[in-house]
Image (cartoon, rainbow, N blue to C red):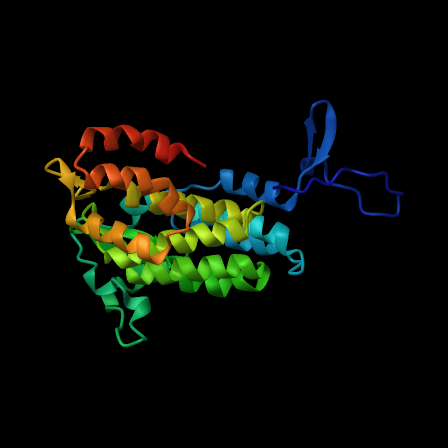
Length: 290
């Protein structure tokens, strides 16, 4: 939630607010917050240019000099994370050449410095790494993925302890993986554990910036636990898939009192009774629950 600061009268000897930092909202002057200024700056950047991330990071540090104001800083970092996601979608075509093999760069940050960057890829890797990304390979294609080490180096000094925990969990999951070729790539125990971790963390941080981000992560994982993915569906040949039968059994043992299990309990019972059509009919309501 943004904290609003309103313009106040100042003497001629005091610094006046730059007119470019003022908006008229409902007929009243509103002085832009740091987060709003960052948003305005980022809107003018080219999201298809990977180098724009370092520009956004520099602007963040210019605006958020006060490292004590962690609540506002969390808002700024949240904006940066959203921008990283946007660049990871739109900058791929400008970073990767279809004729070049970038496999030697995959996972290089997690290899403890044992792998070296090939000389012919040094410039492209420098652009990728210095702008907060790492190289990911899936279905034979290369793409950009957030680099947790960049986030740690650039933003940990500014953020709240809860936001730091949030980024650490994202980094852990980043390293462990999640899905490949539209299929779940982690054991069913890991999927269930992630769902419950995000449920608990989002509840513990509700009504905060990081709580909103955590709720989004929970919803993504919960959706996967409910219906699966294209190549790992929860229902196969009109019956519950083995992966999900194991996952639901584990969920009942691991967190029977969780909101997740309570939301899924009737759905699971229908699947196990082979009442597939009835189970499918519950899905929209389950996914729309808050």
